[in-house]
Image (cartoon, rainbow, N blue to C red):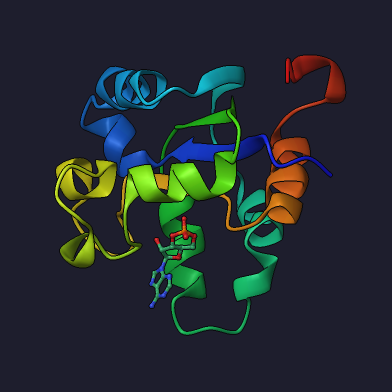
Length: 140
Ligand code: CMP
């Protein structure tokens, strides 16, 4: 297990508003290298599997419905201390609480439509990177 990758998704709200380029610009300017990337759309089964840890929570059905509602950009990002540094760059899950200058403060509209995902641990980053990409597609 390394501490130098994280998995992000630019979520359907941000993709549909045309924010892919701006968000990728913020990410690379902050020092993250793109180790894998694609435009894709999750099926219901994909989203239920990706978010399995949230099954049973009140927001689960809404989360699955939203995350399958349109295309997303999935990317593996490489940087020393990637998980923690990326979570700082994107800001709090709820954009109302996100610090000024963070990606969610700038581009997110609500707790569920919060523009971007970031892995919450090195173990999650590894699982989530391999959820979206084969080993040979990850240039980490
Ligand atoms: P993320 O951390 O990317 O992955 C889980 C998502 O569930 C989270 O972003 C939010 O968009 C969404 N969500 C919706 N409601 C809640 C809630 N009450 N608590 C945590 N996450 C929530």
